[in-house]
Length: 275
Image (cartoon, rainbow, N blue to C red; front, side):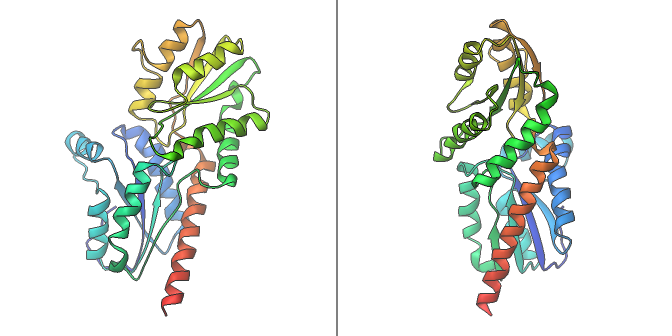
């Protein structure tokens, strides 16, 4: 998705990335395809924020993927005038904040540049994400099963989004849903404690992440003794692990489209004010 010819409008889809090819195609690739459908006048390009993943894909698959700076430099070289950047991040975490800072360095390189919001931004986003997850997991919801979501977690203040989402589940009557994180709070033990307190004997695990990469395959569904699956089984629960990223859900992809369109409207507004 890189170009060496002149283009005027570009939508740069920025993801953390994953070295799992199937998940990359079913999540990030599917989001990019949907964005391409929704923005027919834009050239949709790809950039990853994880340099480690970029290098791993290059080594294992021979595919070159731009990091954010490379993608922005390429857009400048291609003569892009209007640039919309739509990240596929879940939260306004450190990765998103770094993206905003990097893009700010290029503010004068384009006639207009605008950055779309991450997945969970306003109240409507939370509700739409909750409904998408509930719809995807309804076949497992027999009233006797704990439905547990594993998020990534962040040191940024936006980590509070997980507790906000948890509270929305509660207020909406979904009392058998729990959210934990790999690298922050609430964590695995918090989720397990809640599940045991509820007296559940069965649990379904699903990643609350755009892709089903290393965290989903190993930290959640892996066979190591400290994985979520193993810890739940050791606690006596019957476990089902769904290794599917949020990006596989059409309803989630629509949220990114809406955020991209909102960014485009800001772009047009800025252009109009310049004229």
